Length: 321
Image 1 (cartoon, rainbow, N blue to C red):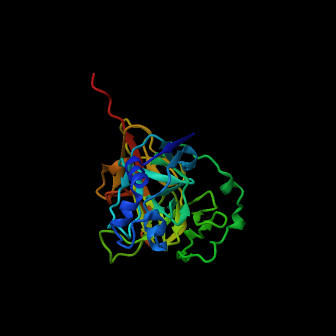
Image 2 (image 1 turned 45 degrees about the vertical axis):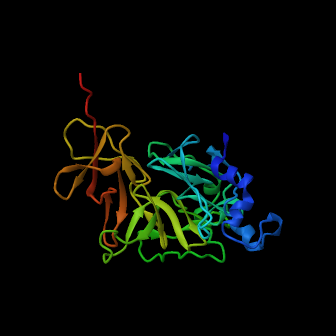
Image 3 (image 1 turned 90 degrees about the vertical axis):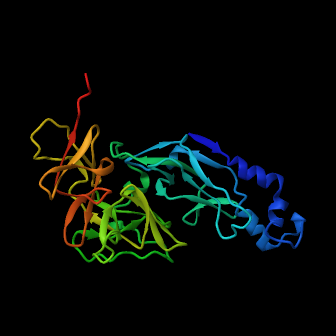
């Protein structure tokens, strides 16, 4: 299903007074036909065509998508000569998806909407939801394990070395920059530093959705801990919690917590996990993510609470009578 989206204020302004926009940054001429190459380029960064919302951009698993989600548009002034007009999903927890990949934003360049250096003719707003089942796509199922596709050349992002038996090489879809793991028991993770302790060893975090290499910034764009991040390296990691129900030592009445690609959550109720304090705590945001510190594996939530033994359950509070 497709829906045409216009950015009325921006396009109306450009359609009616393009020469005025030009004259605000250049005094060389008031005739649009006499603009220089630089002037045209400047104007075209604000003159993007309408963009289409299309559910076909929705990631294949663990996301819900809605064409009606509100957008946040960066509207530029004539002084913004180095910043492109851009779009994001406005509401918390919603991210733009282009060609099945979560991206931070799409921006206007050369009168076209682009994401990570590639044209983005359509998009959709997506929200992480581990209860949504995975659906296979041809780009994944037709790639055999022994046929991991190397990154395109020249490739501007650094590929993390595979120096640990827990890790495997990242593969790429054809000759673009979308990356994936080609084994059913691996999950894409990002190599990054601990935000609170920059001197600590790098952390590997479970990714939500997929990731891609931005050839312009030479960094990987992906989402983890429910936030969009850019990282220098990525890898694939073996994980024993791709699917299934968590076991728990909790003895009271409870529901089952569910693993989905090494992210755990509750279909209903509040996710509770066992911590180093020898008690169960709520998982911030309702999710916990598999992570690797360089020496050990464990689950962590977006607030940094560490959970041990993959011991989780769902607290279901009965409604008031």
